[in-house]
View 1 (tube, chains in turn blue, orange):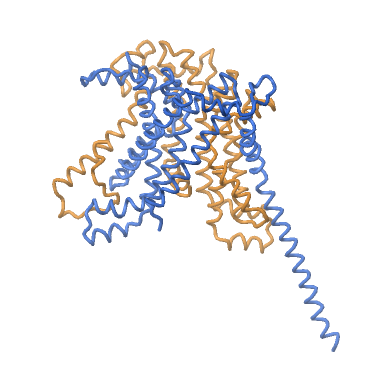
View 2 (view 1 turned 135 degrees about the vertical axis):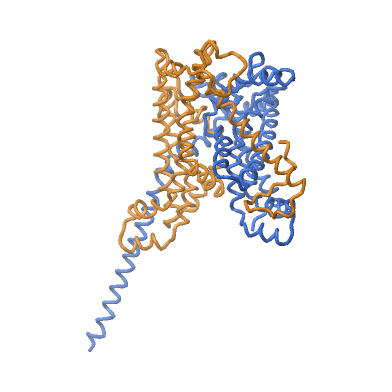
Amino acid sequence: MLTTVADPYQTSASAGKQRISRWRTNRVQEVFAGYLFITPAFISLFIFLVAPILAAFVLIFMRYDVLSPPTWVGTYNLSQLINDARLRDVYWNTLRFVVFATLFNNVLGLLLAMGVNRAMPSIIKYLLRTALFFPVLTTTASLALVWNFLLTQDRGVVNYLLQQIGLAPVPWLSSSAWAMVSVVMFDVWRACGFLMVIYLAGLQAIPEVLYEAASIDGASQFQRMRYITLPLISPTAFFAIIISLIGAAQVFDNVWVLTGGGPGDATRIVVLYIYEIGFKRFEMGYAAAVSLTLFAILIALTLFQFRLSRRWVHYD
Amino acid sequence: MSTSAAPHASHPTRSPRFRRSLWFYLGEISIWLFLIVMAILEFAPISWIFSTSLRNPSDSYKLPPDFWPTAFHWQNYLAVINSPQINFLLFFWNSLKIASLVTIAQLITCSMAGFSFARLRYPGRDVIFFVFLSSLMVPATVIMIPTFILIRMVGLLDSHWALILPATTSAFGVFLLRQAFMGIPAELTDAAKIDGASYWRTYWQIALPLVGPALSALAIFTFLGSWNNFLGPVLYLRSWDNYTFPIAIVMLNGYMGTGNRAHVLAGVMISIFPVLLFFLLAQRFVIRGIAVTGLKG
């Protein structure tokens, strides 16, 4: 009797212990597996992202020309930031480029997406999407080279076409006023198809039912656009504006190949300037300092965008 | 451009026939005009490249320009490929090699980390994930200088590893795949666990096949990004034999650009062909890929 009573107790207790220990080994295994699975990504991220950022914060206090060992210069690089008149021009150029490129890319991208999203034969839709998206896929450097050919003042194709319709040729790349226009134009030409696809995805996520309900209620096209499309596209627009802004602030190959930053400093934007400081003047410390200013500006802009987004982005 | 004021009905159902006024037709016409003009503007330079690359090299500066081929000097392409000074096929191979290795590495590291963040529980997971997330905010420009110094210190300047190693993972890819793994039902991975499958096996045989769209999106963007990368090769590559395609084309212009534009444009076309072919075949995937990544961002 006693044994039969004690027996189930004993077995259940040992089973419970076993279960706990199996649960423990399972937990240990899971924790172990978890760390193991992130190890490759983490090592790579640490070496090539976290460490360089930390290094950049040290580097700004140093003078380092790559060849001789770095020396400590205190806040010299930081005071140089304030005194550098060229840096101000460079940021002014960057600002103009970023504002206009982001604006035109997003407006055109949204309009194109609305156009392409209409009812039309699928072959026409296919052709339109291909034509509009194609420059996005092609190597930017090659395309910038091609636009360099097209925009040449004397025997360039664009000026030839302008003259055919009776307009005066434009010094696209050789005048400092027009060079910035050309750089922005090229960026919009190259990237608006990308934004079109992003907006297209946003438009297609809007439930059809809403438009049907609106037309039953007698809403006009304009009202449907104002009260359905725009509010529901706003999260997509927010995302698109942020990524195109950050992307535009870091443009390099466009400008490098199209104008090389010239004429003079007319189109020298900040990444080009950092490249020049770091790899032509070999002032790695100052280059790092300038790049950190860009970092700070981008973070501030993104935070500002998030703050502003509460006013106009509609989440459901 | 001219139609920015035109109200668009962005949904594909037919609008009621009885309400069509003059304004409706004006709107329709301006929308179509806008789309067609934009399509022409976007595509005309590409067809100009193609037409001019087929011209007789001595005519390549001649105006009026062609927007469809009028001559067919396919020799230009052979001349670029067989050029004794410039090993064009080698550049092609370099680009292909780097882009493929980077893509494979990212698919592995990002999917493993994404699986871990989405499906396994361990102390510190959320903190580490936050580190990954916040690194999304860091622009490449900030790490350009320190990374260059690092690469130089370990003696990888002028080697392809300088382009491959820093790109072996991406915070963006980790985030994308974490979201994708979160989307598959927990019952599936739990069932595998109960059946005694190891975590590796659950990842490899159960979870991974279910996140195909996210994987293909990541693969497409990583490959294109690496293929088009310009700043990296400019910083790290020194010798002619190591050059990748984009930088080689720009160099080709400097090298034989004067008077031989047709050859340079043939080089550009060679860089466009694979992308064009790929896009015509996989347009749906690319567009869906952007939709997947775009909305999850």
